[in-house]
Image (tube, rainbow, N blue to C red; front, side, top):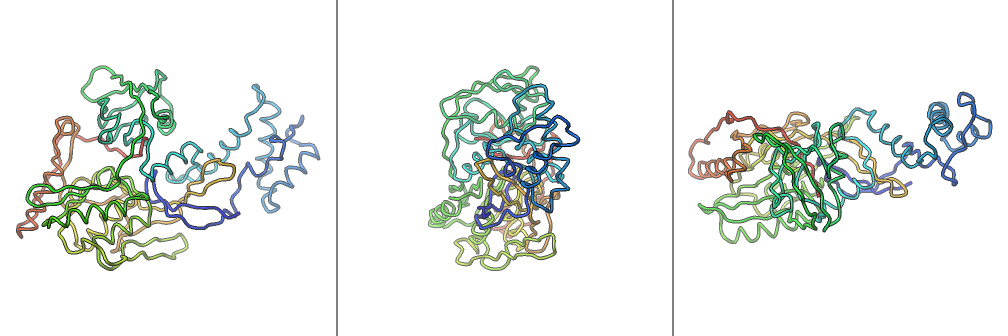
Length: 439
């Protein structure tokens, strides 16, 4: 069965379209008869001959022995579980989820239909929801950064806010990803978030009206000292086009250098990462894809870039991941840029998003590791900035941006031939956050 797969570089956004075959995979839904439910049995240790034959005929011949316990468990649930009737779709989805989780790779998992739809649409720059990047790695859903102009920002959410209740329902013990899905919703509807915030003695409550949000994935402006600023917030379908338009506008103003902001950029399409990198690197390798069998694919610069000679400083933080790290790592390897900020997330793996039949979401599977042009691996390691500068919640609340200030200072030092300034982390701890788009 031919499927459309998506090669994923981002944490929860990304992928190039390519043809692939979902062969050798075991999808429980394919084994159900047309009635939607298998007959149950009275003796679950010894299924009836009819049931056993039906299940075996539906299972690939080379997997019949292996999956005998699976079908036994299926029949046990249908025969003995106290609350009937059984939701077969929920069982099917749970079986896929468990299979993916058993691989022990947090980047490989089952994408439920709602999650798959929301993450696919996010790459098109269209959002319906509160408009914030969030972290789903901890015990609670945590705000990484509200999107500028979004309902989340207008309501007053801040980085580090932990969502402990949604519409009055306690989120203790609820998987943060499930909490994230509860925040999603159509424009015009409201959601009430109860959060804890560092320095606040009591939880804070925010009633937020969801909205349709269109976000440019790349935009820019001129800063003082004739320095251009380019903000790339994802590597989606429109990023390359928007970046080229941005560069065309900025380069007409003859900037002396460019600051590229990749902070809280969770990643995106592999092809977009190569295209974006090619705007700043004239030739050579952008990244390698290293497969489990030792083979690799080499992705080279495309040529004809708009800004291949101008000095560059790149801003990164703990939310810069995958495709962002590809761009930053390549620029660092070639000496094209100095990195400023804090260590990046460290996602050096590539995933396929393989849509499943009957609109049942997708299987997200890690297929390769990626390496920088100098063959550095960054998975679980990240990129270390040349100039380390933290940004605290206090800075955010006060409207300060010491990282951008340091990037400007670094750029001016580069232009004047002076030593690059070095900065040390502040004494105020900063929460480690992993961004996931929350629409």
